[in-house]
Length: 122
Image 1: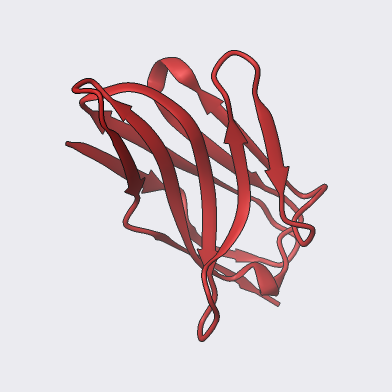
Image 2: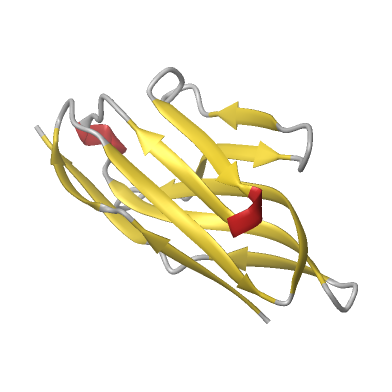
């Protein structure tokens, strides 16, 4: 019923920047929470940043990315972005987009993107 499509990953040198995008499509009534998670090799998936709310939004960042990453969303486009600056090798991993979606039929959907690889070389 819904689909999340990510883009923007790639290979970058330490200190560089990348911008991830995630667009939601389908039978969407509203999206209350959008977030980015990442999973490094042999590690558990961790929450990197999230944005909650529609008109009044609140954001959360993992301590490891505070001051370097910025999450934002375009409500009209059902899209969330993650601007990543001052990247470090430890930021390497697969980045997954997540959205809690209210469906037009009245249900809720916990939607995940397919993941996009981010590799930061030292």
